[in-house]
Length: 250
Image (cartoon, rainbow, N blue to C red; front, side):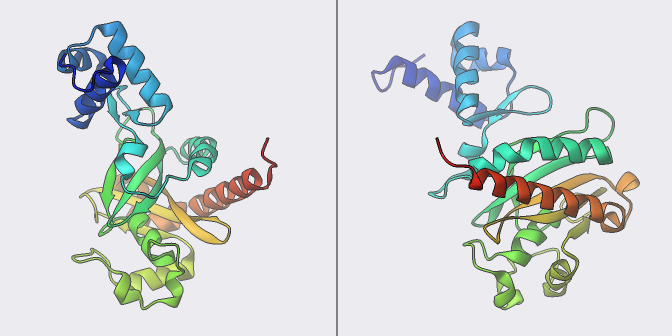
């Protein structure tokens, strides 16, 4: 492996990051791409995973972590990510569908946590994935309740919030605010349905909690089927986040 900075461990870690940025890789593929030994590649990838620069997809392959995917100067809400893990698992187990947590970063939304259905047909969204703000129930929630800077979207002209070529219109965002959840069928991908609800911190919407899967199971009215479950889970996550915020720092 070429030494670039003169700091060997940093160059090796950078090689691992470059390898995962090129696409999901198994440990064997990581060794091939970096030229590192198997033990070194695994040790560095595991360390980078702790710092959330590297993640794992449902097949156990190494992928960019949420910190890499987010980009920009805005930090990810780590307390929210930590609090979301059990809530996502509980939601998945209660509904039998994959669950995800999204935060907005400019013109995309980033999956910062997920709990995948163990088997069968499912919607797989690896942690670190970036999805457009033009389609999907998660995008609807993030647009309906916030303008991306934390401002309350209900006080803004809804039409001004819509990105170009959006699969939904202003009336959809108004309906999302009335119902407290959003649904989509085939917006992001044919045959895929989802339902999402807002997660709040200090009264502001900071994330969208989502449930997704094939239309055959979620039906063409996923909100009717899972709206109550997704809102309950989002409110639970909001409450747990508030509990974390109220805990005195050590």
